[in-house]
Image (tube, rainbow, N blue to C red):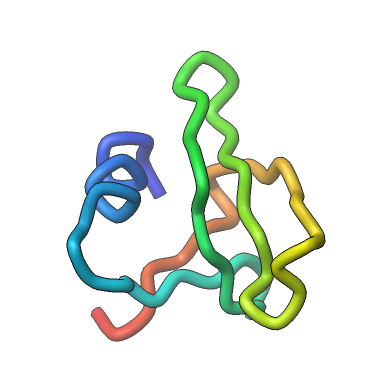
Length: 61
């Protein structure tokens, strides 16, 4: 996923379904310089991860 779309998802007024390697995640922030994002699995909100934007998939498209 490109960083522009990730920013749109973060700023969206409603929750947009995104997965990382098949796991539903919440995106907290994006770092354009490293092309990474800080995410939390929805079922483990205390488990913060830095992931490559290429692994993020918007569901329902």
